[in-house]
Every structure is written in C-alpha cells, then in structure tokens.
Image 1 (cartoon, rainbow, N blue to C red):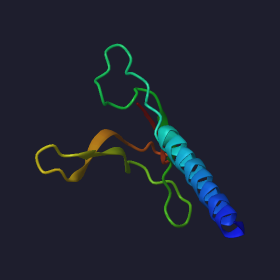
Image 2 (cartoon, helix red, strand yellow):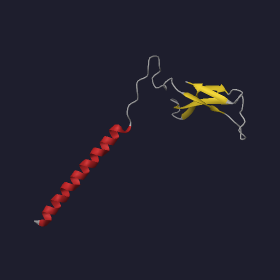
Image 3 (cartoon, rainbow, N blue to C red):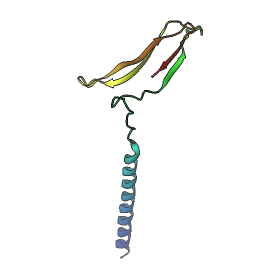
Image 4 (cartoon, rainbow, N blue to C red):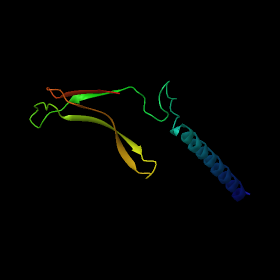
Length: 105
C-alpha cells in the first residue's frame, strides 16, 4: 500500500508541475510580441512612424570636424521579389562646415 501511495503522489506532482510549466509557457508566448500601434492618418501601412531625429558630429581621428561628409539614414527591408534583406535610403544630407548633421524623419 505504501508503494501505490508513493506512485500516486509522484503522478500528482508530475501532473501539477507539467500544468504549471505549460501555463507559464503559454503566458510568456502571449506576451512575447505585443501588437504594434496602427499607422496615423496619411501614413502607409508598414511604414515607420514619421517621427524621430538622428544628429551628431563627424570628426576625423584628431577630432577635427569634417565638412560636407555624407550622413545617411538607412532602413533594412525585405525585397518582395528576392526575399532577401536590403538597405533602403530613408534620408541623407551633407554635414555642415563644423561637421554637424541633423536628420529629422
């Protein structure tokens, strides 16, 4: 009788443990990727939001500013025809004489 009681307790513990593990697995999967917001008026579906800023200063190895250097903002997209990733130009500009750039999207 002692052996069957132990087997029953082991059976219950395994089932409870499995159920809890399964619960946490599905709970983590449900919250892993929250849906994104809907695009605003006039925005293309799937396009990045039209907000943001990239700014900085381009200098050489001695710290001197580099005028008329190219500052570009690229976006990685998947080509629908080849199914390969490619970089697409979002915005670009030349740096000012002091090496500064300011890209607003």
